[in-house]
Image (cartoon, rainbow, N blue to C red; front, side, top):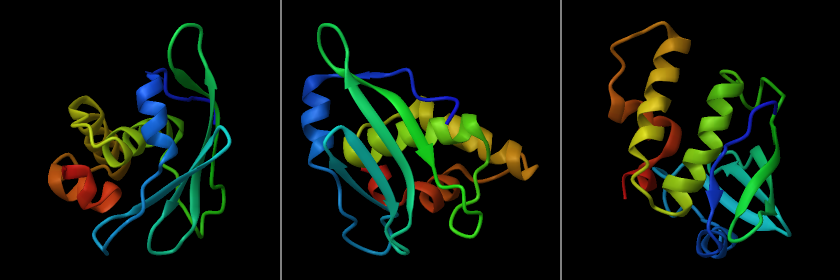
Length: 138
């Protein structure tokens, strides 16, 4: 990916991220797990890996994403562009794994989805649920 999130996650965030997240029902869309410094984000229904983000420590406290890849097979995942994928990686980690409100990221997701679809009246809740799942509302 050409664009990766700028956010620096704290050491406490990283501890939580390393525990991952497993979807508990059909309304949860993501399974997230960590191996070494890589976070893997898979769709829960299909098991397809969509994103892989490699983290590295930053000076002081925390970690940031230094590189990421996105599934390139259009049969498994249809990307809406670099900006969308960058936002989705940060939103999955923030909202699904950490349970943060992530209001700005959510608004950005709705905006980018509307722009990509050419529809300006997409219901915010529907967009978020279809792409993030029910855990994202916690």
